[in-house]
Length: 215
Image (tube, rainbow, N blue to C red; front, side, top):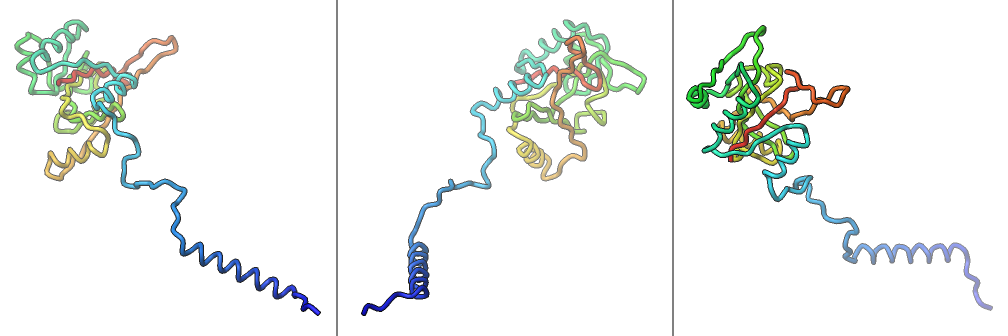
């Protein structure tokens, strides 16, 4: 008479088979279904043309810019001031003072809280391509902020000071200043304020930024 198989023996056999399959699986090499992720890589892909990236983002944000070079910079600045009929000019960039004087353009270098100007000329230390932003430090600025001066700001900057993102901006600042950052750093992205009629409505709080980008 054949011996019947009990429930316990069947259960034990199933457990052994399961353990055998687990041991076999652990000894086998398998490829992960998840792709490799480099946690140190940049989140966003680096643009092919840094200048084009900045110009597009700067313009889309609401800024206006003119590309020039060292030879025609003064001529373009002069045409811009005369064309916009700026009467009172605040110049915070002392390096271009001789050029303004040579073109018979009167300017002031400081203002009090009750004085108004038509345009201010400032220098941007760095341009940030990723956001279309401008970085200012107290090295070239006479004021706590570039804002709240006047509704029109002419920004002078060099293409050589164009960086990809904020991380590169601070790293370059440290390299230029031997590891020391300025106490005051202001980063501004231009805006295009529009009133209820759909018209551009600039003010000292939301000024119009006109960038003269020197290549």
